[in-house]
Length: 146
View 1 (tube, rainbow, N blue to C red):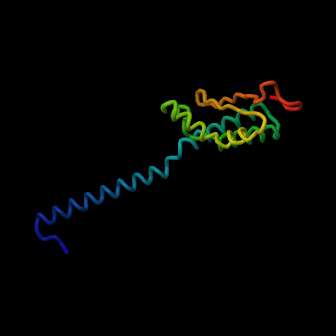
View 2 (view 1 turned 180 degrees about the vertical axis):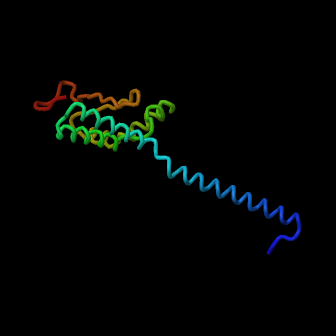
């Protein structure tokens, strides 16, 4: 099939132009995704470089260097890329409390399973504050410290 009339030729040219633009847009976005790294990984790589430079400058022993690397590796694995305090500050207090209790539910369950000592959990400024309450008004039995 080939266009025969001028209007068909113009229509075919417009369709090819739109198709070319869409193809270029898709290729540009895929290239951008491939070339731009995650900001977090770039920041971590810069931090690793700074830490290694510091350790070399101070002539630290290999043992201490490895401990420092292990520490940062552990902390980066546990850290999130989100600013958790900023997100939680935007939530209402009741929802913030619910989130904090959910995040720390395993810890709370361990402490509440204690038979002799009760713990009251208070959420204050996104942190769990543990208040130890001794259930014995006259003092704890001998050998148990509240």
